[in-house]
Image (cartoon, rainbow, N blue to C red; front, side, top):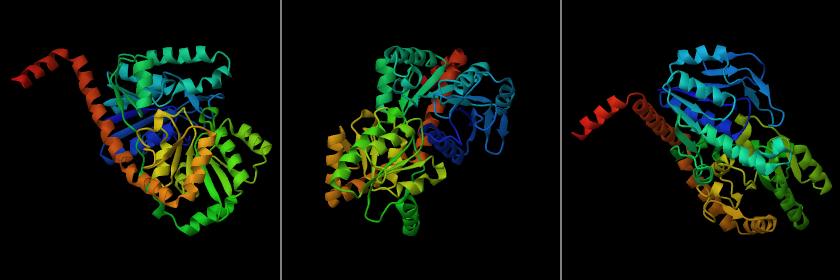
Length: 409
């Protein structure tokens, strides 16, 4: 099969969408399929085709209000001829704007079946545009635009969680067929046995983490919707009880300076470590530096970092949210908290109860197999094939009808 993935986020950008796209591409290629990626050029305004990688980079304009993402034109003329040469069997758009619109136009122009993944809960990102003003109107606009995006030309929609499914089906009343497929990752990259204790200790030393420190860990984008301020408040309460607690925050984003000022105000400079952005290839080692992984965000459609933490045998502590229900079973492979007070209590409880701690860590490692990239690729392939069948039925209704009659006989 020849597959075209159209996405506004790809290397060198780091995000959950990038991870999902890379894992899908790698998994499909291992199964013998040819995969092409269309994405904005993050380095310049030139169009570049990396033929060996199968990546077409088209000119894009930097969006100041959305971290360091770029938005491409919806119909770059030079790129059209390249896409035509690929003779795609299916187009999979990973975004609603820019490149996503281009992908939809290519699907329509060349009669290619179209699949769409809904990655982002845009209602939780409205504040980046409205700056806190007219948020309700902004959320209504998101609903309206989502309904426009999910038109009849999309044969299949993919979401990573039940929560995202309910938003599209029940709240937005989207009619398209929607498939719940949790994103897979290369879980083997994060296995603890892959890392030498000497290497881990060297990283800890460089970051100022002592041997007996209790390290709380967060990895991801530093944005307002991630609710990282909560775990800083949690740390403050913990430090009042034990100075050995430290918080390691790996990543970058528009909220970082605000959080750094908060840390200064709370006099936690010695207990909070901001590493900044880390290369995707290096993230597995950072998981090994933590003792517990904290996820305070209500805005996730899935939370790939949770799967990565589980593969790293880290106990995962999530804020109670439907996004995580298909991954975390409380007291089995992770724990849930509701607010600052319950989070503090839970961390102290796990730290004291070593038996429970080990049970959760072991459960995390054992339950992560279903999130492998191979399983993910199989699920998506089945959806592609269904989209192709639907497309053929729409284009050749008489042929399809004759085939159905023959089957019944």
